[in-house]
Amino acid sequence: MSNDGVSTDRIFDDEEAWAGASDKVLVHAAAIGEQDAFEAIVVRYGPQLLRYATTLLNDHGAAEEVVQDTLVAAWKSISDFRFQSSLRTWLFGITAHKVIDQQRRRTATPSEDWVLDRPAEASSVDPAARATNAGFMEDLGLALGELPYKQRACWLLREVEGMSHEEIGQVMALSNGAVRGNLQRARATLSVRMARWR
Image (cartoon, rainbow, N blue to C red; front, side, top):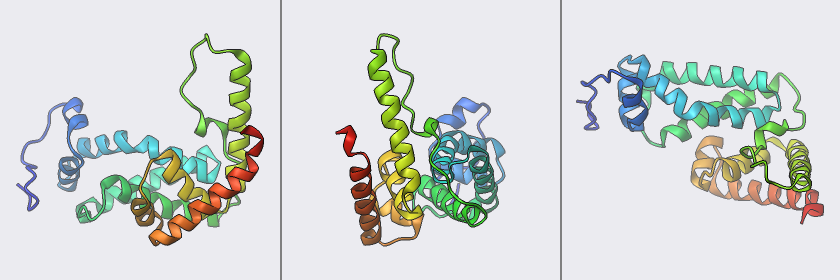
């Protein structure tokens, strides 16, 4: 039993049990070296981290490298994690730092369309509507690619990942006021840039 009252004595035998475990149980198990618990964390949060990194870097290969670096760093320091934020926020914070490191080595390009794609639409959807949606998503990707890094990161964390201002502040190491300011500027720029779609 850990100090937080979470039992880490019981090691799960199958992946389904790990998949249903709470973040707290997974962290405590991973901290004592249970690799399957950490793999469950990767399955739970890896796709979100990859989507975020890909949209910021506009390069799927570089984003995969960033997420891999994030997960290696998380594995190495998981025993130091104390739930002062959620596990998700902590992982996004590591990813944000790795993205900044990656950006120092390269220049950003417009967002890749697939990052903002919605799930596949039913075949009954009007082809004209599908073409319009594709045009909107392409314009949105280009507009996001033009935003300064902090504005784009804050917008993605809020609008795509659904994080609160406080969580975004933790990820980005910004005050709530700075988060609000970056979101307002991003929304204002996107509103102008996407005006033709209203």
